[in-house]
Amino acid sequence: MDACHFRCAEGQAFEKGHFEREQTRTCALFDKTGAAESIDCSLFISGAAKMTAQNGFGQILSPLSVDEALAAMAHGAVPIAGATWVMRAPLRHEPLPGQLLSLSGLNDLHDLTIDTKCASLGAMTTHDKLAVALAPHADLSGLAAAAGNSANPGIRRVATLGGNIATSAFAASDLAPALLAADATVILATASGQKALPMETFLASRAGLGHGGLILRVEIPRSPRNAAHARLPMRKAGDYPCAIVSISVSVLAGMIADIRIAVGAVEPTARRWTALEDRLIGTAYDPARAEAEARKLTDGFTAREAIDAPGWYRLSVLPVLLRRAFLKLQAGV
Amino acid sequence: MPIELNINGDTITLEIDPRTPLLDVLRDRQRLTGAKAVCREGFCGACTVHVDGQPVPSCLRPVGMLQGCRIVTVEGLAPSGTLNRVQQAFIDHDVVQCGMCFPGMVMTLTEFLDREPSPSRDQIKTALVGNICRCTGYERIIDAVLSMQTEAAK
Ligand SMILES: Cc1cc2nc3c(=O)[nH]c(=O)nc-3n(C[C@H](O)[C@H](O)[C@H](O)COP(=O)(O)OP(=O)(O)OC[C@H]3O[C@@H](n4cnc5c(N)ncnc54)[C@H](O)[C@@H]3O)c2cc1C
Ligand code: FES
Ligand code: FES
Image (cartoon, rainbow over all chains, first blue to last red; front, top):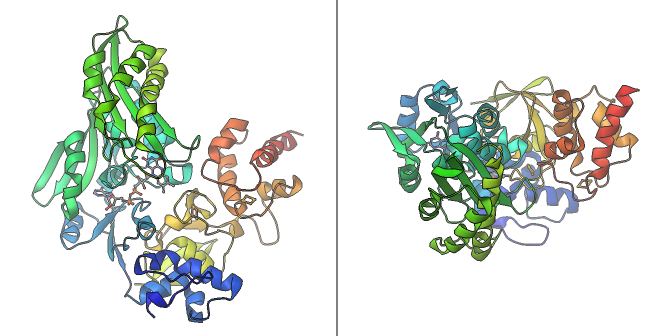
């Protein structure tokens, strides 16, 4: 049966892109109203599975080594980690990839070690595990807060570090700015060997990685800086942030000795706010002054216009978020 | 390849596309309609089930990734014909309105209270961030959960 034969109870025809998303909803409407005579009853009985079967079953491969995974990716298989982004493809009017590749069996990608020199975080580490493991460390607590406050508890139990930063179409990543502020390096496996890319380079190049790069882990050099993460969702929690400021700062005798400031969700990709870092370095650690300086420098951003917030709003809250991030650290610096 | 799933203690084998969301298998194949399909994007929590003891949104879990996992739905929380303590508290305190969100609330709170038997009001709110209710305004749900501690202490 062709997708265009489907109509919901309101009589709206489904386009191909809607097809997978709406199929069960259609069935539910059929169940409730009995209004969809053009639907084959067996579709109601077997739901999504039957529908996908008409185009042939998809596949989920489960490689046990990185080499196997890269070989499958070279033939078009798309990696899935927590699958929380990939499974929403139909909602974005994108087809669900036919061949998926579960990374669950790649043991190295689950490793997480923190020593005095480096924090090494496997790509398959979930947000909730990150939050718990990093929280005790002052230099990593910005990333801990990013992981522990993103999305909602159910998503945080499943969504991974690798999946979060790999998604170039997702502007509101909490982890990306926190990793920028932490000077993180992304370690990738590619057909031509391993690569270590500074977070900034990784973010700029990830859309072009296509099927060629598997994120193995993220490495963060330990530092004497303290870190904080301030985000503004439209609801108090459980929503995407419309703007994010992540900072990592060291203070000597009340003066800012070293600082990283990264901004997320404002532009399509997170980035450092170097103009503001230059302005603040060597000055007193003062949340109100930091906010005032930030306000003079917001026109360096080209803010996204999107359904959750207009661009001007994102810019207007940035300085406030910077102050909040400063305030979070004030007791400890 | 057939997929083997363990749902509420029963092992079932399905010839099915492995990308199918667990939610659809539960509702359309197994007739376990407790988990609700509301947003299908991980925001509302109405589809929450336990996978290996963890409350997760079943709408975003492809069944091909769940072989060997223990899946428990709201129908499997307590022996047939009985209620678990969260369900009982919701009834005792007349909390439920339309009921759409409640299976998910029960799944989230059951695991939460196993982990955190004496939570504060704020902790309960934080635990429920991923369970949206459009009817109740939440406060009675929280009161019911808090009452469980008072009753347990009696
Ligand atoms: C309701 C909801 C709310 C959310 N709120 C927030 C929020 O507030 N803040 C936030 O930051 N995020 C938020 N998210 C986004 C969520 O964090 C992402 O969906 C998640 O991080 C993706 O991770 P995953 O492991 O599920 O990725 P998957 O869906 O498995 O994969 C995502 C992409 O990454 C690729 N990929 C995965 N792992 C690797 C790897 N190791 N190497 C190469 N490529 C890989 C996949 O091929 C795919 O393209 C939210 C999501 C939902 C559903
Ligand atoms: S239906 Fe799964 S979270 Fe809403
Ligand atoms: S009781 Fe109706 S949505 Fe919660």
